[in-house]
Image (cartoon, rainbow, N blue to C red):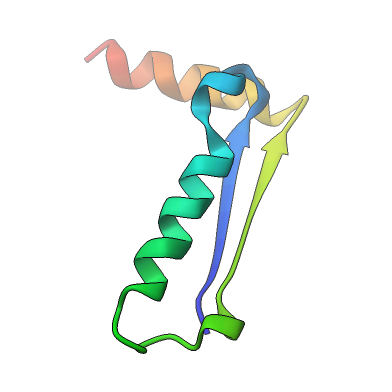
Length: 66
């Protein structure tokens, strides 16, 4: 059974369209011709706050400074 967990930082805001992302993931898994039982598909998203946010900022800066 696929369990999809999306973690994102709160600086993304509503433009990230997390519900639409989860729906797309679910629709894609359901469309796999029965490879996954529909009742077993689980997807959820967690918005990260506080200490995780500065780490994401540092990672973004280090990746774009190359």
